[in-house]
Image (cartoon, rainbow, N blue to C red; front, side, top):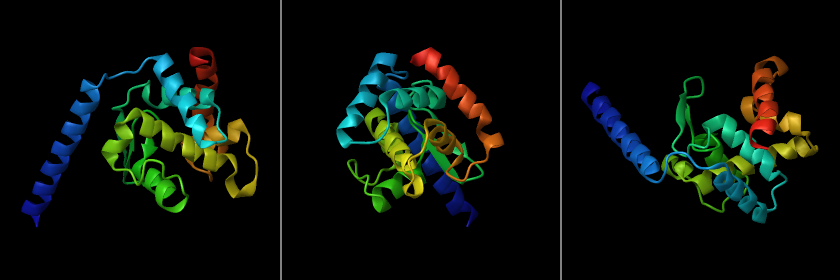
Length: 170
């Protein structure tokens, strides 16, 4: 059993290295105008999300680095790409919620800027009308960070970062 676990871990490490190298080779950090263009392009899907909101979140989450990734210990999942979307969330959005323009994503798909922005915007769109109620910008931003069941104290720092992003990236 230990030998099989080591083989699996070695394989995963190799996959992450390849994905990281591909993302870095493609141009590690995107410009503000490139992210603005990506954010504007998701408008064709009719999401109830402003491009500025998408740009601000991408700046907070990844500093515009498409290869950004972090493992979320508490969730047993990885946040990946410009929008730092959880793989499980992106798959749920595609499979169960009808946000399927890019199919059901793999982890490497979320490192593609257009895919990351699509699923981040899709999640914001979902949050914008959570439980069939129109939601405020502040509610959506806090819920993007902490989930729809967030507590105000746990998302105060994120909301502050978002407000600062308004002056940093528009």
